[in-house]
Structure formats: C-alpha cells, structure tokens
Length: 114
Image (tube, rainbow, N blue to C red; front, side):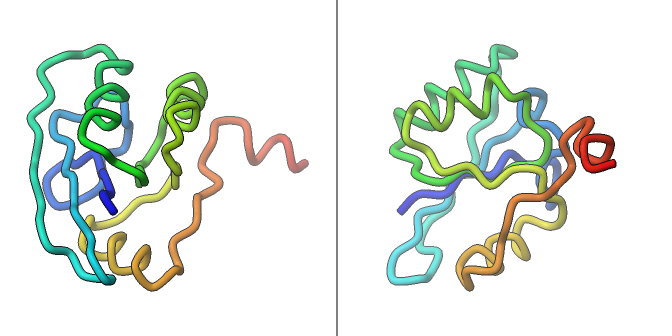
C-alpha cells in the first residue's frame, strides 16, 4: 500500500493545494519500507492528483483541502483522511494502528452544528 502526505517540514502541510513536497510511503505488512519525497513544481492541484494516481497511491492523509480536490481524489479511488494536523511520523503511526480519523476543520463545520 502507498500512503501520501503533503509535507511542510516534519508536519503535514496545512493545505494540500499549496504544499511544496509530497511524501509517499510504501507500507508492507504494517511497516514503512520506503519513502520518496516529490518536490512539487506545478501549482495546479489536479497535477497533484495525477501524481498520486500515477504513483499508485491508495491513501492520502492531509490537512486542509478544497472540496473539489478532495472529490477528485476520491473519484480516482483514493481514500482521503483530511483535516488532520501534526507530525508526519505520528500521523503515520496512528494510521497504521487504525486510529487516524478525519478532522472537523472544514470551513463552516462549526457553524453548521449550531
């Protein structure tokens, strides 16, 4: 399985569309066996979707992401765990343990509950 995380240093990037690096981790038998960091030259969000598809990514763990991009990721059969924050290593650990869930950070999410 391949898992992608847009990075900002050692943390997940706060916004999928504007990160400069995409880390792709290969996981076998519950262990990380490889990591490749892709510098992102294109500012086009759909180029990022194509990169993930072309690299055989199955799961995307990210911070904020626009609905249209998240829908495009899902349309390419990628599982998206969005609106999370923290260090990449910790997020991967939580994912591997089955404890990582999408956050409630969407704009307007708090107001919708009122």
